[in-house]
Length: 504
Ligand code: DQQ
Image (cartoon, rainbow, N blue to C red; front, side, top):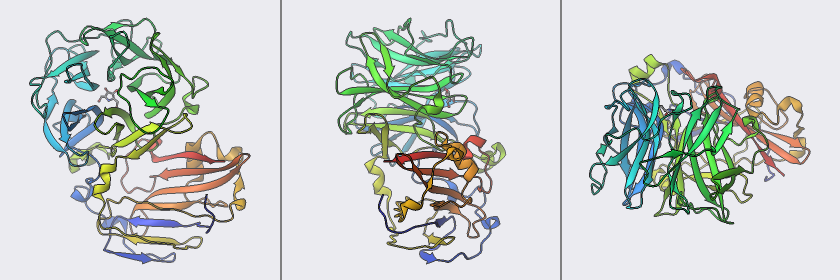
C-alpha cells in the first residue's frame, strides 16, 4: 500500500447536485433529506444498470450470445412492481450497454408451468441454437424442469419460444417437490452426453445439487451421485457450474473439460442467507465428480462470497466472440411493496462483469465489461486532496445519482494501525462492520465515501475502510452501510456488509 497521507475522512457524493466541486470543512450547505426527489421520480431509475421499462425484476436467466446478439432473460412480473406472476422477460443488445426490450419469452400457460416460469439457463446445442431449461411451477404447485426452443431459429432476435407438450423433462423424484429448481447451463462430456445440474432439497431439508445426463438434451436421467451436497443451508438456488482457465483471463466454453489448465467453479445461492458462494476445484469428468479445493469443511462462513451487498442469483455465460466469461446477478433494489408499486419498478441487474480465476488459483476476480466505459462522460477529476480528521470533502456533480467513482486513498504511518484482535472478528467481516459502523473512531479509519447523500448528510450510504495490523501483515476491512438510507426496506442482512482484504 502506498504511503503518503493519513486520511481519516469521508468523501461525499451527494444525491442533489450542481455542476461544481466544493470542498468544505465539517460544514456543508444545508439541504435536508425531506427535500429529496419524490419517490416516483425518474431520477431514481438507473442509467448504468439493466432494468426493464417497468415493474418487478429478480434473477437474470439464460444469458447467451447468439449470432452477435446478447440476450438477457429475467424473472419478471409484467403486471406490477412486486414478486408475483413470474414470467421470463427478454431484452437484447449488441454491446451489453444499450438494451432493447422484446416481448416476454416464457409465460405461465401450461399445466407444467401454470403457476410460474422460474429461473433457468440457456445452452447452445450442437446446431448452434440456444435452448432454454427452466423451472415450471405446475398445476399442483410442485416444481418441475421444462425445456423451450426458439419458434423460428433463424429469427435474429429469437423473439418467440415454444414449450413442447412433452414437458416436464425432469421431476422431483425422491426430493421435496416444492424445492427443486434452477437448471444450469448444460455441458457435454467427452462421452458425448449432455449434463446439467439442478438445485434440490431432501426431506430432512438438506441441500443437494443434482446431476442429470442426457443424449439428446430432452430425455434426462438423474445420476446416482450428486455433484455436491451441503448441510450449511436448507435449499440452494441458481447453481452455476463453469470452467476457468488457470492461465490468464480468457473465459472458457462451458463444455471445456478436465485438463491441467482448467479448474471448475461451482456457484450457488444459499437460500437461508440470500448470498452467493462459490467453490473452486477439479471436475473429474470421467467420474462426474467435483472436488473442491478452496474449502475445508461444510460451513459457508469460511467459503468465499461471489460478492457483497445486495447481490444474488448470479448467472454466467461464455462470450465466444470476445473469449470471456460474463456474469450477471440480481440487485434487490426495492422499497416497501406499496412504495415499489407507487414508483412502478423494483429490482435491477448488476452491470455485467468479466469473471476469471485469480493468479493464485484460489479466488475469482471480476471487473465490469470494457463496453461500460462508453458510458463515462462529464469527467470530474480531483487530484491530491488532503483532508484532516473529521472533515468531509464534497464532490457535487451534474447527474449525481449515477456516478462511476474511482478513488485512491494513500495512507501514511501504517505502523499506527491497531493490531487486530478477536474483537474485530477477522473471520466475520459482517459482524465487524455492524459493530464498528462508520462512526466508531479507530487508529486508521474509518475513511471512505458517502454516496447518495443529502446535503446535511442525514441520509447517505457509507462505503468505508479500516486498516488493522495482523500477525502476517495488514488487513483492510471494507464495509458498506445503508442504515442511513431515508426509506430503506431491506432485509437486515443487506444493510451492512463487509469483507477483509489481506495485505501481506
Ligand atoms: N428466484 C426464482 C427461483 C430462484 C429464486 C423465482 C432465486 O427459481 O430459486 O423467482 O432468487
